Length: 471
Image (tube, rainbow, N blue to C red; front, side, top):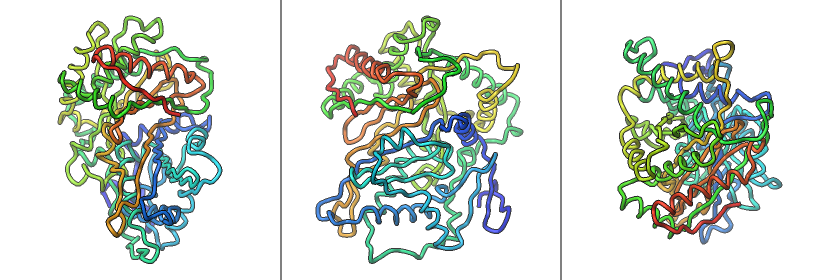
């Protein structure tokens, strides 16, 4: 067990939440009075059985594989406990069966979309749903447990296990009492971040300046008009999405490559132009800055940079500023450079201190809070090329493809007035998906954002993109 875990009684381990986990957990609880959870992740996959596997019992295979997945990723069984989290070592297979009965659901009546929209929270445990009528698989989890790319890697491993499932060869030989050895460390432990008391005065000043800038330019940055007032209660979290054809996706990638910019930078530049066009009147002169999720997995030492530690939150937030008066190409070029150079040893070493100060400012109460403006901007979290993490084809025992993943959808529940844009590419098609809360935004406003982004890309890259709006 990692040093930060303490065995409080035989088989019962506890660890204080800290850093990124604590901020995400505190945010998930911030709206619990409404019965809703901020930033609950969902990932929905449309699956198809391969030729010759039509008689495959997918429901049983999923449930059995889900239990095996828990052994490889015991964080799936960790539950929050006050300011910490608790892991209980299973004493028998029955303990695992009990966990599966709470977390694996075969849903015959509701659709994945209705589950996503209406799910209450926060949940103490993740959930895996299987929908036999539509052959969809849905994973739900609080963000403190896992991040977006981790979710893709986790499901990749799940489908890999499912494809190899054979009823006559069920493996019940797992050494469950040693399951804890597969627990992943926190982001701060994995990257070797210093304890706050170990940080020098220069580090402290660096972090304080970074957090002041973050809250000034991003949290209180450009906002979009929204319905209601500060007293308006949240409703269901919703989504609007579009996909480009494979040909248009290829054309967009080629146009960006020819100009020396990344696709994500082009999308970010187009999003900034959209924010300028749709902003609140009082934000008409502001530059654009958003909280951008940055994947830290590629920078972590082995083995934390790979799939074996998928069930963890290994991301951080960045706040690049896009100047209002700059051109599209200048914005995209500067963002491309920023994406390549944002990482630094100083940032990693001070992560604990960053999240400590960030949490203090984010959840501050009382007279010290002087700016009570409600953020209503658009944040960005690019998942990149999904196929790198979720392969989409999984071979069975005979080598033939047993499972195909034909469709992919990802998002979060939002309880605030902010929107969140997720771009990703899967099977050669770029998708743009926006999450928002219907208490504060109409679906047409989210569609307007998507249309504007596409129009900016077309105008500045000389393209005519073939777009399909998704149900």
